[in-house]
Image (cartoon, rainbow, N blue to C red; front, side, top):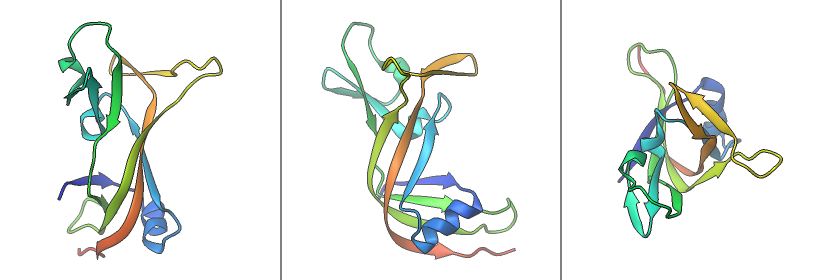
Length: 132
C-alpha cells in the first residue's frame, strides 16, 4: 500500500471528513516535485528531473500513484488528528497564459512551469481525533 502524508488545514480536513470535498489539490514546486510526479522520456520513467538525459525528446509529466493519503491537521503538539483516505485517481494540471504557453513560477532561484496535482478521493479508511 503506497501512502502519502500531507499537512492540511482544519476547514478542508472537515470538508473531506463530512463528504463536502472529494479532492485534494496541491501546487507542484521544485521542493515537492519528487513526491508528486515522475518524468517519462522515450518510454523510460525518471524520478528526478535532473536524471533526464539531454536531448530533444518530449518529456511527459506523470502523476505518481498513491493508494491512500494520510491527511494530518492541528497543532504540532501530542498526537495530531488525521484521516486516511483512498485515492481513486491523480492527475497533473498545468497553468497556461492567454497564448497557451506555460505560466512560469520561480522559487529558490529555480524556474518551473506552474502546475497542480489533483487527488480524486475515495472512501475514508481511518480517522483519528488526536490526543494532547
